[in-house]
Length: 208
Image (tube, rainbow, N blue to C red; front, top):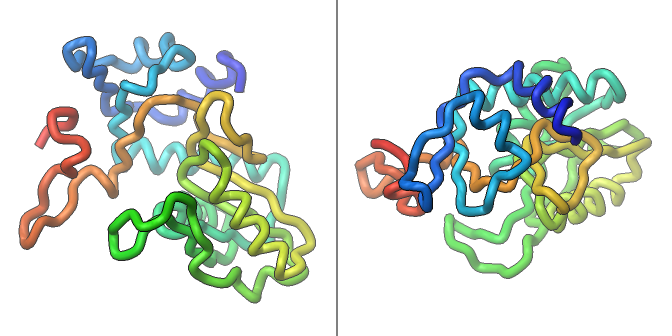
């Protein structure tokens, strides 16, 4: 994605919540700073994604798909890929299904590589499919999803993600490319017992 197209697309997404940079004293970067520095984002930086920004990002992703492709149905990779997948399906007015691919079981990391934990929907047979995930870097999860869907003999299948990494796997459609650690709104806080608390992975980075 070229810098100019990134800046144009970012107009869909105001406001950004903030971007934390731990090694710079966790100073907040405002919207203008973020557009200037997006191409220079480092892995130690955090992008705290609000629900509002997430919704606008999904809308922008749906628009990119609509200009170039007309899928018959949308398949979101569970768990997190069902969030953008369902939104894109709603915007495009298409049926939505899920496919579970994960390194985790019961919230615990139990595999070095993702595994396909459910069969691709039978409805994929003979249809044009859009496979959606929230982010891709190595592309392992998307490749497994593509293989599972192709076992259903679809007419065509393309991929879309909310985020990609520089130099990583390139899906057919992407909303934004960044190397920041993204704090997704559904992952920002978790339950510990009966209390909703900041995810331990982001302690000292996000506000209560």
